[in-house]
Image 1 (spheres, rainbow, N blue to C red):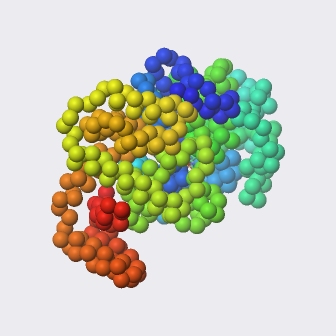
Image 2 (cartoon, rainbow, N blue to C red; image 1 turned 90 degrees about the vertical axis):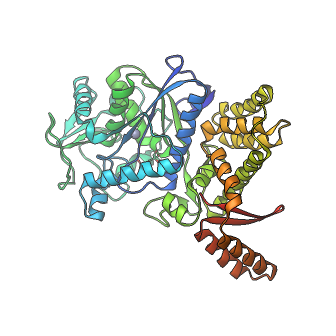
Image 3 (cartoon, rainbow, N blue to C red; image 1 turned 135 degrees about the vertical axis):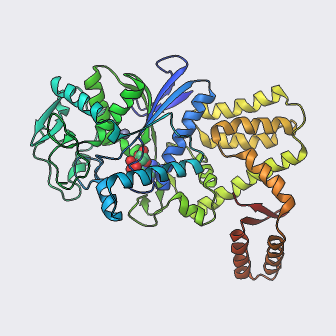
Length: 470
Ligand code: AMP
Ligand code: ZN
């Protein structure tokens, strides 16, 4: 498989450290609010990567942290504390907020068929590990104490900006919001490993440390949690592209200074989901969550399909119009599969034809996880010159990676077609009449009533299609 590596800026053959295995780390969510569908785009694409590596026969161990302490709104060392902000907003304790939004995150993941990583570790459970690594960094001369905080000294590294040149302007991460620059730092790019002095006197979660009572910085969490579970050599580190700097840059700095050798070979960065007005955010515009999409009648798997239709290294624009197109395409995929089921899945699978179909699918994903072409490979199945049993076998096989519940939903549709409630049929009939009379307002109203009963209705060249909404 070829993968683009943000570290080398090249597409490279993926070769794990240990043959047959893969150690994979993912930056988990900061659990101060619901995940927006942009965050979830990253997790969907990382899920596809993990599943494809497994599909290819690798024994993958995937670890994810839960950031429940230390992440400030600027991604640097200033700004508000995200967890504290969430707790204040909801008049709850930080741990209550963390528990609530961790559960909410995994519920969203479940709806999107995102597999839970093998290890999920909240940062607050690893304070001893952070202290151990920070102590060693001080001993080795890579960290210093100033004004009560412990900082990483970036001037001790041969190369700090490993992902490319960073504009001087970007270094102002910490001073962006009119916050005063931290005068304790020896170098502009230095970052906090452990806070004992911060502007958050009301910080709820604090721990004793050799440097005083305080709490860890965000970056050290991921390095330590990864090393704790995956050892000194990491194959793939994932995250959204915004994490490359400063978060991942700092992770590399401190991990390699601590270990004394290269830490992670491949960096997989997912590009952003944007809205028409720019970067998606939890505070500006409509707060787009999985639940919001569901309340508007979109199945979470339609959103997964929408993400799979484009390459992870291209930014993707979200609009309801684009999502509607994905919905139509997804429903077509399911109804064509239902037609195959109706044709009969009992025949013998033609092994040669199946291999040929698989070749198209793996060629797409071997090419830097080109899910867009993998979706095309799904549609190619219907065109193939083979029997229904072989086509269904191919779809089931590809769905081990795509996780679109293709066969399950097609079965539901095929079974459901026989028992559409009379009430729904009547509404559909009235809607057809309204459309004939060009009363589209009434037709839309009836469509909503049909949706409220759990069905979607669509006019196709073959006639009216009534589908149960998942
Ligand atoms: P956070 O919960 O803020 O720590 O972010 C969780 C993950 O979502 C990180 O990997 C981010 O890089 C990623 N992310 C943040 N915004 C977006 C976006 N608009 N599109 C895709 N991924 C994002
Ligand atoms: Zn991280």
